[in-house]
Image (tube, rainbow, N blue to C red):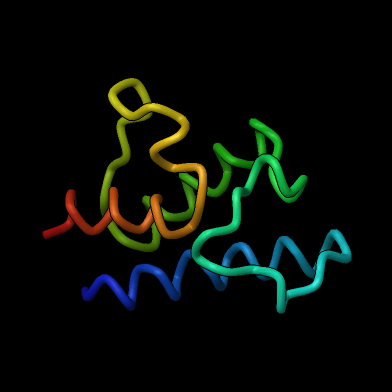
Length: 85
């Protein structure tokens, strides 16, 4: 799985949530801060992490990762890609 594949999986998931909340999909990008944008709260973010673990097969240990290191789709992608490869 390439980094681009992982990023597309994440962005697709975020765009689905954006659509549910009436957030313009065109505003979803790799640098979007998911919590500050209002798209995710802490519980929804955990759901995103679980979905990414299921879709990529990579376990994300939240105890060893600072929240700022996975605050955007791009940063989350970097973590998954490093652990995947």
